[in-house]
Image 1 (spheres, helix red, strand yellow):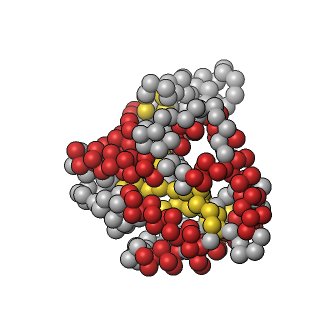
Image 2 (image 1 turned 30 degrees about the horizontal axis):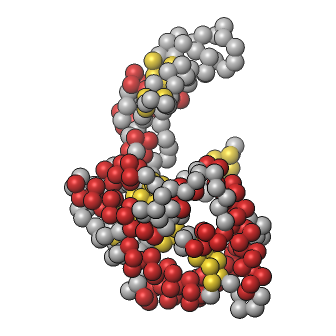
Image 3 (image 1 turned 135 degrees about the vertical axis):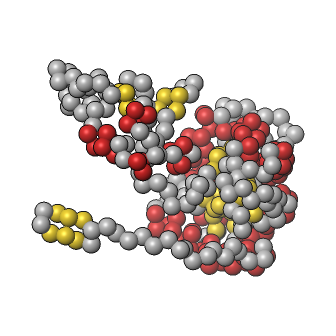
Length: 303
């Protein structure tokens, strides 16, 4: 947020320091820019200026007694005060932190019982903190508010089976799921598969495709079956609006096959979801006009 809302910034935390205190920077352009009144910072705030050390190795711009105190990010975002920010959440601590700091929450794939409780925690913590968000718009709809773009999003693996050779296609997709979770498993992701109130799974267990599908984390079937399972998430979690992300990639699938899944979902699932959910958000036309500045190359000017 500092990078997006301040003309220059620094951060000195427990694990990271930006910029590091030893960063050398003796650049005339930086000094010229922060000498301008409209820069929002002075040279003294951004640099600890010293005399260039011409005896050091490397570029005199970086090998100098001048050290960098703050850095800048350009261009600044068009959205004010800053764009939406999202935090991937799993633990109660991370969920409450996101709600307190005006961040939208997005969950890793987890059973719907746990998702429901996590949404409740997020909503509860936001209420305690006067519903913080970047535009100070007050309370929002439970779970997700499509108009205010505020709340808690969820995701699931989605795969549509063909009408022919469905079992063969299912078996292939199971292999793809297990390949992915053979990677995720050793990082402890088995813990997120347990339902609310269920003992935590062994972090070193083999995660099977059948378990992932049983938990509803992978939604696989015909378009009607996929629609039914997605709407069940909305209803169980009491979403007023609904923010759902479909994850189509699978190990061993070609790009064209993944794109085909996306097309099938858009054609056969999304229209039903839109109807059942009362429509989708209507986005206003952008009022931003980006006009490219002329670029001069030698004696030739191009727009």
